[in-house]
Image 1 (cartoon, rainbow, N blue to C red):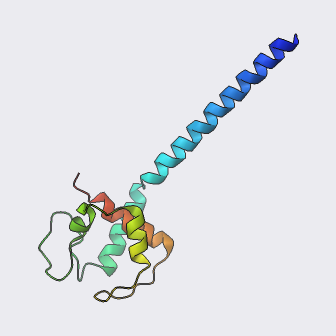
Image 2 (cartoon, rainbow, N blue to C red; image 1 turned 90 degrees about the horizontal axis):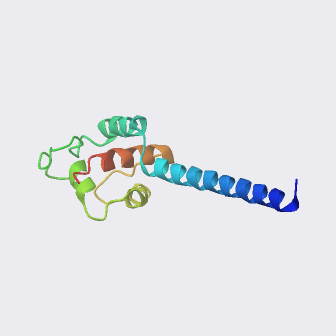
Length: 119
């Protein structure tokens, strides 16, 4: 096998490996931005247990509770993102009980709220 053929094969292998790596990164990033239905269901379960005494947690129930915004209204706010909700869960609030929740529970609650987005 000539030297130029070995170099061509080496370059082809590097290109294939690079493409596979990039596909893996893109797939991982896409999966991270879309939580699974199990995570959303867990968030719904947590919302029922912890939040429904003050918030309307089901879709299209805005106005049902006067004191606290509905989860639908929170989801539809312009600035609501997974990151903003993550920060919210870590901040104490005067009109809310101070919940101590795990990062997984915060992710599940956030996923549920974001699943209600009306766009």
